[in-house]
Image (cartoon, rainbow over all chains, first blue to last red; front, side):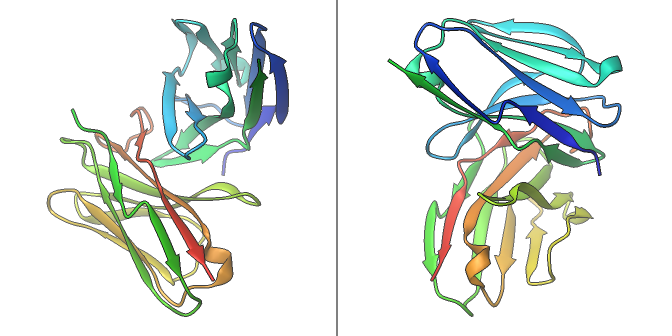
Length: 107
Length: 114
């Protein structure tokens, strides 16, 4: 199956700082999603972004499909941004998840 | 529109028992996928159902099974539970389950096997 790697595995930020999370994938894809898993385990959709750039408030994402990577930018981080961020790519009707980036934002 | 719902949210079982988890997709979605999340293995695909048919299955033993009903609700069953089955079980729904679809996840069922 497709290989999905995320970096960094862990990130600790001071509130207000900016960060960039990276997702590399091993094969061409026609879909990529970013999720935030909250402390209760729920996966929250952040972006559906097979290519290009999207922004939603303090978050934005860019996927360069030809180079097989995606970036998630978090600006002016808040404590509520803490949690694990996953990217996921599909092969057919199965999604492959990266190992996640665990983000801790300290006040 | 209501989101994906999963019941129960928490479950404690003992080794050797069996368990059934339920997932109700977003209205209009016909594809339901199941994932297992553990600290050691991350998020792993179990199986996907569309219109009551299993279309894809991950690399899990036969103790893990599922089904989908005509209203798209899905259940998964784990028989002869083992300690290693302790995990968060997540289901996701999408319109057609195609690679271009957006997947929406439920809150999960946290299973503890003692």
